[in-house]
Image (cartoon, rainbow, N blue to C red; front, side, top):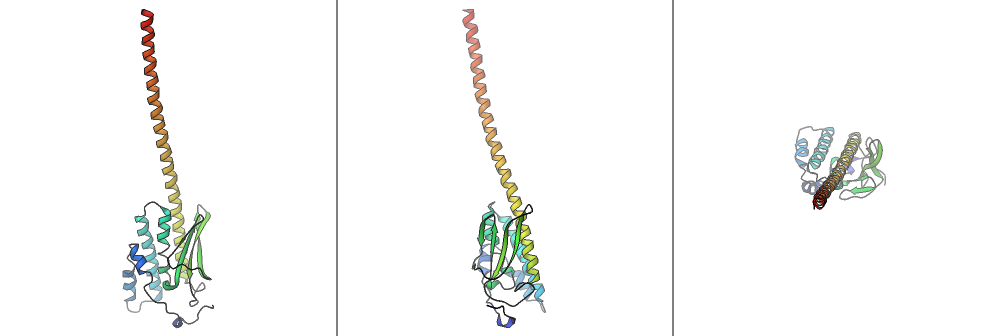
Length: 212
């Protein structure tokens, strides 16, 4: 299927992502509605509002996170499609360390853009946004230049989150190991005190025997 050349032939229906964003506790529509109600609002401004919505939503999810990066990524992946120009035909996938997280309505297609997730300078995964049907040609296939900047920025942020989570996991493991060693040392000290007490008792018994 060839991409469309006339935007008038392409009119996806609205409202597909509202329920999911509401479930995530993301207040998305207010900012978008404010922009669309402005007189002579440009398409660039609307896309900029979507970008700000996306970063704000990700920040909210990070603040609410339970500490499980898998749960966090499964939520973030559903924030991405509404941030694109045609959210009604958009879906997304996040891959990190051989684990894959798909958004609602996921369907792979030839129309996609990706950005690598770097972990300490090494590619550890990627973010991909798909359009499930043909759409008008833009700066990068059917995608806008601003969407390239957005997906790269989100990938960079996820890389930082992965590094932070890795540090937290290592710190928690170190704390557990330290607590285990501390418990073992306490038990060893208790056993040593018991042995020393027994030695003192035996010394007293020996002295008494000698006197007798």
